[in-house]
Length: 170
Image 1 (cartoon, rainbow, N blue to C red):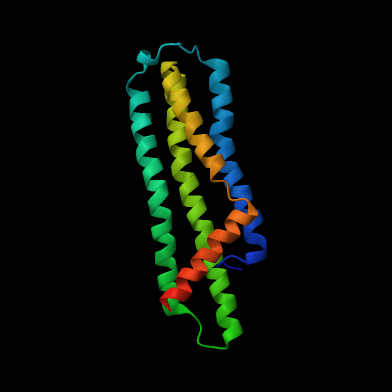
Image 2 (image 1 turned 60 degrees about the vertical axis):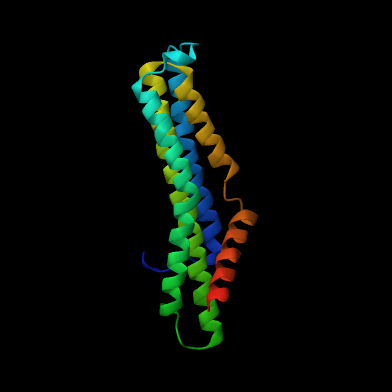
């Protein structure tokens, strides 16, 4: 299968778990290292510019992660509507399932990448400035990623929602 082909629905869920697991594990492992190395100051007022920039980017990333991936997935479904094969109904349904699967995967990967970047920046702020604010924001971003983790039922529900959106617009 070439890289521009939609993902096979049978392997997509497992692949997505691996990718999202890696996106969560990166900042989590880095935070463990930061906590072991950094001299944390118990004061919330000791936060420096990296911490506040990281916290601001975390807010923007969180808001962006709520809206952008869904918009991109809907755009992908709209384009698929035009490119769907005109063959038999079975072929069209199979192609549609593969497209919805790929759009669902993209939705989760983009969301997690946005959140991971903010978590890393806040972890760097904790390391450089040694305060609890950056550490707390980084942990919050990781907690959000864990709360949104694409376990198979959640992933299948997202895919089915995209399929429904496609059928509603058809």
